[in-house]
Image (cartoon, rainbow, N blue to C red):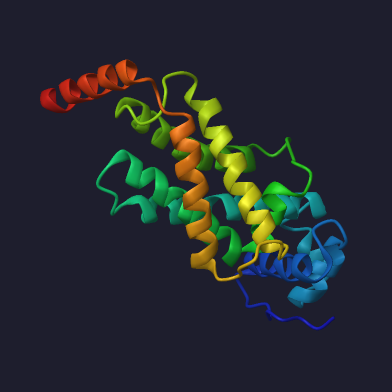
Length: 217
């Protein structure tokens, strides 16, 4: 296999990450070796070992890169949101867009076996998930979502968007355009949010509490 991304001096680590993405695209995350990644990057396998101990080390770096890019895109996407729910909805749309535009990163993060021994990868994953938890907490404060464990509510929402993304990536939805998939996710997100809405009294109390906080700011 010829290198699709020629190595440029001083950027060996990124060249190997890009080579890994090429191989994930053509062979899958578990079906290549670090030597193959080095060959695709156009470097010797001994050079690859200067940055990565083995293939698992390389895949963990791919996952870290994916988490960081996803977080950046979601944070940028929710910026125009004027309400807690608008930001929450925009986050789901951004997740779908990231997944469909970066299926290799998505597959390493959500399909490949998780690599627990990599603190940097785990920290990047927590930052990404923490963004969603914060949005859930803001929706709870606004009376849009029921009170309770925000982390569990965020996990429920995450499972939904992962499922939609997987169906889209594998061609199991009746539409293929990214915007159509994102619209579909938003409709499911609306239904899920309505199902997790608080009772009227709880919502009223949450809105009152949120109003006091904004008035004292």
